[in-house]
Every structure is written in structure tokens, then in C-alpha cells.
Length: 372
Image 1 (spheres, rainbow, N blue to C red):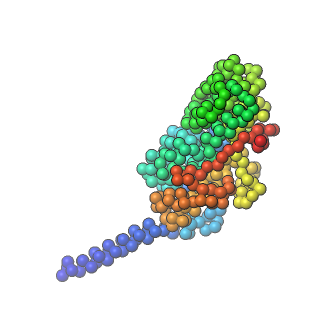
Image 2: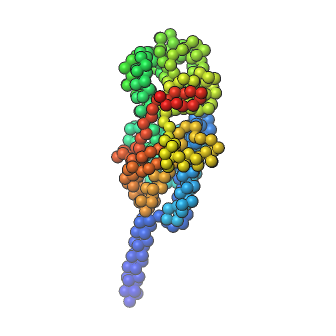
Image 3: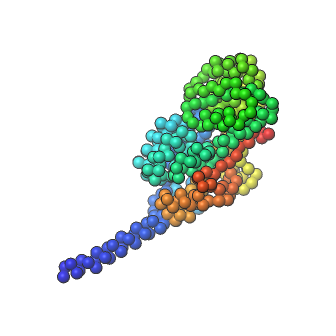
């Protein structure tokens, strides 16, 4: 008799548990918060790459929450400053995942994506890079996404401009403490039809570039491509002091106020790869107004702020469409996003998880980027 009583009870328990599992997989929990981590530089020589990014992400979070969140759940942004140091990025990741319980992370430090890709796969965490996007990064694994300017396009447009201006001999001075600037250097060397008279690497913290610059000047370089961060301003000043009167090329980090201060006027007229948001159009116009209201100024570097806003919004959309926090389902929904009207324009993900924005050539005039 006792066995006969327990059998139907056991069946009921199994049915109830199965139902609970189905419901938990079918939709997000109705209580608590959905945590998004942000890792990037807020301080240090590369702070310009992150100082506006997390502000843009927070604005997106606030707007989502004010609209009711997703199925009653609010979002929370947890910010970690890694000073653009990969080792610190890894420490920040471990905290976010193992202590804060974060499943989604925006990572602005280029080297961190490569260092964290396999960890994210193992931990079932989605990584989104809102600053850099290229085939090497997007091809790491299917837990890695990027929504940002196309890294290769920087080198392509600078090379094309140098050729059109008739520069036959070019020197390259590049930061070699992570893989981003070497990538730009490699693509430039591949694309440029002229002669690379010298390609010299330097590490983070370098302040004296006179030896490398003198070699380039002695080899009659028409132009020098400077691929780095705030220390690039020092290199520009030293090149002029050594008598170089040719053209400088650079990346969007040229807009950094500390870089321009270090250059002491020698950054004027530099040609560089850059992207500016379509601020006269909606929804970009409204976001720009919100950003200025929060920061008291426009974003210093559009490509380090506007994509971060869109990254949060498309992630929230994917979670909503998945009707679940299941990582596999959210990844699938991210890849389905096509033609999303974001502040960078239309956002569409390719099969490799990349949504790329092509950069253009700008000139620094009175400290401000002017599109050619």
C-alpha cells in the first residue's frame, strides 16, 4: 500500500519540477536585476577610450529602466577601470563573473577580448567590444561580438590617402603593448604601395622617441604614421624638434586632450582615421543631447561612446526577443538583429558576430576633427 501511495506522488513531483524548469528556460525571472559589466580605461594614458563609453552605456541602461526594463526586471551597469591593461582586465572579469554574477560584459580594452574569449566561452558569458571590430577579434569564438568601427578600415584609408598625396616613403612608429596597433601597422604595410623606410615598435610608458624618429628622418620619410595613445603627442613634438616637416598620420586617439597638450601644437594638421556620429538625425540627435546633459560637454571620441550606447540596447533587445537569459538563446537573437536603428546608423550583425562601422580620413584643425 505504501509503495502505491508514493508512486503517484513521485509522478506529480516530476511533473511539477519539469514544469518549473520549462518556465525558467522560457522567460526571464520577474524579480532582481540583469547585470551588465563594463571593463575599460577610465584613467591612465588611454582613458579617452573609456571615459565616455561607460557614460553612454549608463544612459542606455537608465532609459531602458525608465521604460520598465524587460519583463519587470531592471538593468544594472557594474563598471571596472582596467587602465587599458590586459592583466587588470582579467582581474576585473573575474570579479564581475565570480563575485557580481555578471553574464554580459562590454570590454573596451583590445587585448582583454583575446585574453578573455576562452574564459567567456567556458563561463557562458557574452563579451561585446564596443570600441574595436575586425575579423581577428570576431573570429575568436561565438561568445565574442563586436559593434564598433572597423579596425582594418583605419589602415586602408590612411594608406590610400598617403598614396594620393604622393608620399613615396613612409615611416611607422607604433605602440606594441597589445595587438591593436600592430594590427593597424600590418594592414597599412600590406596596403601601401610605396616604401616603408622603417617600422619601429615601442612599449607603454615610452617618452623618448628621438632615436626612432631620427632614423626615419635620415631615410627621407615623407610621412610618419604614429599609431599610439597619449604618448603620440610627445613623439610629434620631438619629430618637429628634430626638423621633420612632413605629414603625420594617426588614429582617432588624436582627439585625446592629453595627447594634444603633450603635442604642444604639433598635432595640428595631422590626418587620421576617425568616425563621427550622424548627430543631425534621430535617434542620434536625442542621444547627443542626453549625453551633453549628463557630461556637460559632447563626447570627446564618438567612436568610443556612441557604439557603447547601441551595444547595450541591442543586447537588451536580444534578451527581450529571447524571452530568456539563456546565453545560447541570447547569442542567437543577437545574430538575428538586422537593420536596427541605432545612434550609429543601421546596426546589422554578420555571421561572425561583427557589426562594423567604416572610418574616414579627418584632419585636426584647431584641435577639432574635420572630415576631408
